[in-house]
Amino acid sequence: MQRPLPGKAIRLFVTDLDGCMTVPFETPQWPDYTQIRALQLQSQDDPSIPPMSICTGRPMPYAEAQAQFLGIRLPFVFESGGGLYDLTTNTLSWNPVVTEVLKADIDAIRSWAHRDIFPNFPGAIPEFAKFTDVGLIHRDSSVIDRIYALATTEIAAHFPLFEVHKTDVSVNIIVKEANKGRGLELLSETLDIPLDQMAYIGDSSGDIPGLQRVGMAFAPQNAQPAVKEASHLVTEFDATAGVLEAYHWIIQHNLRV
Image (cartoon, rainbow, N blue to C red; front, side, top):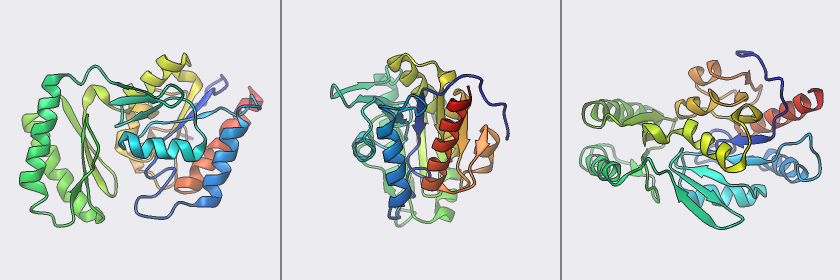
């Protein structure tokens, strides 16, 4: 246990996707995924079970598909904190901090990637359908480490309003004021649920701003060390099984408070 647990019930459980609900390039762990979905649906009738939402760096179409699979009807965050999508009203809203000036910077970062990254790292591809940030993908984590080093240098030198994060298979260049911390704040404001009554689970550096803001922060066993340090609780299991484990912890917490 890294941080003291909250004294209030958790009213919303928010999950990251890659590294949590699913593992990139692998078939989902359907038995665990199905149990998570069952708990999320049961939340409609059982007050001890909080409903779920999503806060992911992935683009909206992928996040929307995952929300449909899980039976989520609440708004969710995509592109870290770049956008919010409401499934019930089919309404998409963009973070207003991403101005036209920043969009020009995003285009410039994409141009840099096409000039300096993709030709030099065979197998590297852009993360398609993104608008407020730039994602670079490769299956080899050692290649990702090299791309991350180059991206960190480039962003620090030329784009001070952006920050760089990485997972095992991606490098994500995002607007500093549209990170996952802000994404969870958008959810809090939209749903009128205080951050200290929300739980979040994440596995990579991009999740830390979100984990630092919520009442109950989880890291799956496969999370990066810094993410585990930023969390209240680290699950025994990796990825999907870890999310299910966290969900049960939240339910037991709610039954006690």
